[in-house]
Length: 155
Image (cartoon, rainbow, N blue to C red):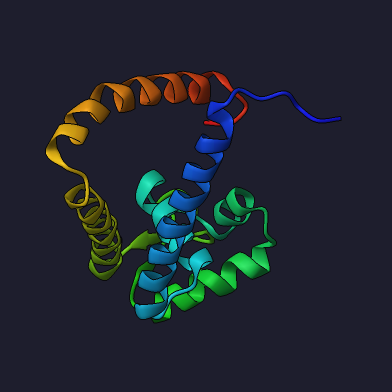
């Protein structure tokens, strides 16, 4: 059964698909150039967002075994992006935190993304930029409201 769609739907699908391809390709290139994998980078973002994490915290967040999480965290420690310390309340538990290098790689990733966006903006004439602003504000408002009230919001 075909879902009936508004004429806007195919254009939005095309736009989102192209946007995702460009962003993911740029992100993958950045991650690869820095000797990381996408899952490792996701772990760094997660730890940056929530703070120090245990192996089991990472396993639960990403739906992987503790053994797999431990291997990925070990590699990030070896690469100098994470440090491992005893948990203040339980010395048997180790917490993984970002090192200065870990913070710098996240900042560099964000800068690479901002550079990509700046490149897009340069390709749009000033008049179109001003026309897009209220439309983008409205789209952001709609999507943020939907996201905050939906199953996507699990925190």
